[in-house]
Length: 464
Image 1 (tube, rainbow, N blue to C red):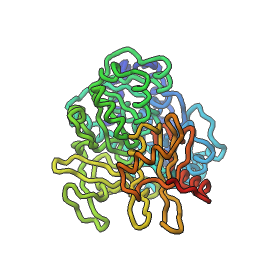
Image 2: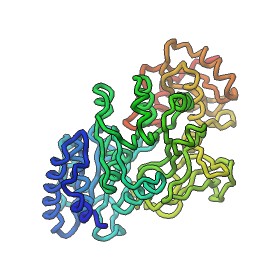
Image 3: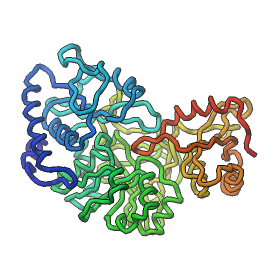
Image 4: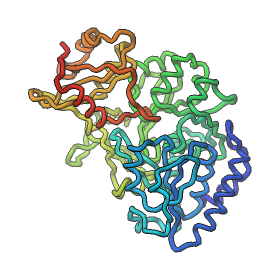
């Protein structure tokens, strides 16, 4: 069904809790009238949406889906550094929203063509550009259509065998993880609860029974610390993704009998392509689950050869939800996001970490996520990031940036690690922080932290 027909069919339905549904439909209609005028020109309008208002975000997004417009989603919390990455990627755009953006963005759409080659875009379809930084910190935009986004919705519904979705959204709507919750609810006739995570923490949850909740691991840990287990147990499934969930948090969630559904996905695939069902999680499975119906997962070696079950390699996927492109690159056929992992004999995916983040020290390969998980499992650290910095003897030195839990004595922590990890995996230097800089999705800019560690450890002190 064309999005405009679907929206007209759903029109005036009170599908939102926590914000005003009537106001949503009023703003949606206003944006549609505006797009009616803008789409009379020779080429589709290019619009940058930057707003902290969830109603403005939802109304503008769904209006843009109904017209052959190019809509770029901006993060209202971007600073100067992020805008310096984003601006060169944008052609002249009109700005929608309530957040001030750098003056360079304010250009007439008639001046020059957009920076991206859109010659191969489907004619007459909205092009929806969703920001992604992954773990690299380099901001790009994944180019989706209504078809790729709704393919993800259909796969989700089939996998969970639930065709009217209700969701509790505490994630930003300019991220794919928040946006897809809204799409699932509106397109299936369900209801979306909208609340910021800060409001959830300070005011408590909104009333009502909801099937699905989506969190990043840090949010899950904070809710457990705040004693929210009874509320968390009320959901059919708690989708957890965006960053690796450490073993201690998985164990604590299982002990609390939480219906966790660890997921694997990304902006390029319009959220998850693999999810572990809660019953499998509660029975002791620590994987990221099996592929959803709209996706296929395989593991390949560096030459593109498929690998058998149990053998680690590059995660490779195809999906009907795959974006048309990301940045300047078109996406088609098998897609490799740069993650390493393996599939077991039953098709469960185990993610080992980013291939780009691999540390090679003394000829040995170290996956940072494995060391980070081991550090967090000791209970002596609130957070940890492991990076490799240049070393004249080892090639790379494994160092840990960590947030102590109690005492900042790294010697006690290191002694525990040595009983669980090979010696070459144990950090040789430690740097204590009050907190590590994570974004709304719980991710960090590893490249930037690695550079800071290089600067800090110009004359590193080796921890014994």
